[in-house]
Length: 285
Image 1 (cartoon, one colour):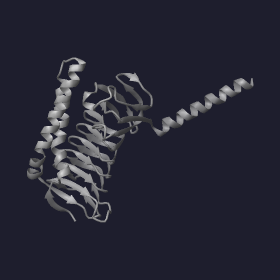
Image 2 (spheres, rainbow, N blue to C red; image 1 turned 45 degrees about the vertical axis):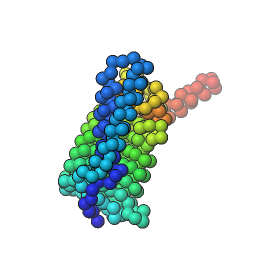
Image 3 (cartoon, rainbow, N blue to C red; image 1 turned 180 degrees about the vertical axis):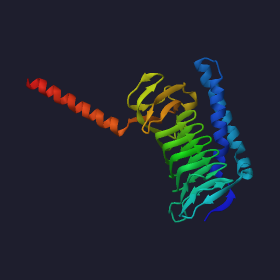
């Protein structure tokens, strides 16, 4: 049964840290016309300042945060109405998953967060702020809108096949698979060396900064945290036909994997097989 409660400490930390970390670090780094060595030093100082501010503000966040609607009974809940608070979903005390289906007409004026063996299936509606998956939860996003970011923490799994995300997609220790949808700004894989994120993108005609790259993995350029990475632009066509045209950043140890759509893979396999047959015929002749 759903009930109202104050935001838990792990989500309180997220609410504060997400705004300071992304906006503060990237805006600072992008605004500095400095040399490479000086830039590394200054950016590290900026990151340290941002992280320190976030941890100092954690107690304030947990005390003053707005109430969330809590679903933790191991049952399935269909939301086709607006909840004027956040939504927090987790499994019950016996480990049974709680499922929330966000349907057309439904939504939250704050964040939607999944944790501890829960399921969130978004097939419509709107989330005014961010969608956060953590602690082995599973999220699908096929339609609807997210006003700000989508996050995957702590071995969670997120599948994006449609809909609109207003800001960034961030994999911090989780797995995000993208086959459709519109992404507002950036793709980010990884938070630090311990939180190794993976983003799988299904589609074709991929290019980085205008140069075709085919399929494979994209890694860190400088071998550090994502905030120090140079801007790189990924373009292409996703599985459902949507276009991807976004900057991306990869932390050391994390990766973005570009994979073909099933049809392209089959056609490629047929092409290889036909080439092999022609080669054999030539040898026979």
